[in-house]
Image (cartoon, rainbow, N blue to C red):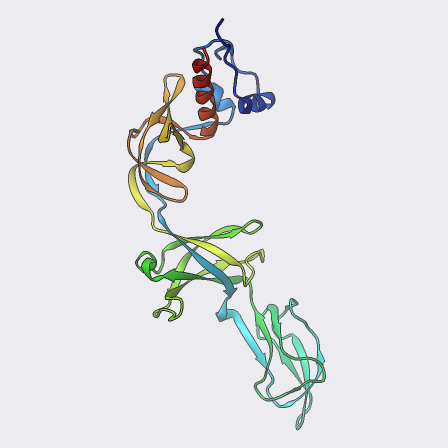
Length: 300
């Protein structure tokens, strides 16, 4: 007696929460049956037509979030004296003109230390009773509505990083990612690290991009290609890359040759013609079903 083919476990789990398969679905017990394109669409597989696009090539480089130096103020004592009162501490939000501390001058009346713009106190160098001299730093106030991402560009990657180039900044779990553009590249290399600094300015209305946060910066250098698909469309079967193409109402794996590869998209240089309908997402389901078919036939 021939062995009955069973649906892969993963598909069974999804099927429990999905609408029943249509009447055109092949019966599970038929050894030569396959799911149809419509069936896979019910399981969440997305299909699209192959065509030209941009491959998001580039380089990934380490970086760090820093305060925007153009919106950072070092508040200092104007005259020598003793700090009589400190009204803020690190982390406090302050408004333009707000008094941060009161200093009793040795020769003048007490005077306030104030901030010139809205921001956050990110450093404090004085305490009540402390004596300060003229120009002595007391507070650092930064407007964190925007921050700088300073990217370390290795010598070998300098040619790939240019002013105006798009950058995707990855902050990790809980922070997410954001897009910006290179606004500055240092004209000299650091003698110790042999790197240049590239700068990206990011909006920071939510406050998630905290100064001191280490990030990964993907400097994008998009390249046009005749046929481009999402990386999620490519699976490996038998050690070779395949794309699942639509043949009538069925789906079959087709060997392809890959070209340039980006973070999210990849070029297909052979095996997939423009206009061909293919599965662009959810392809792990297709791979699981086809491998289960092969396993079922091997066990006859």
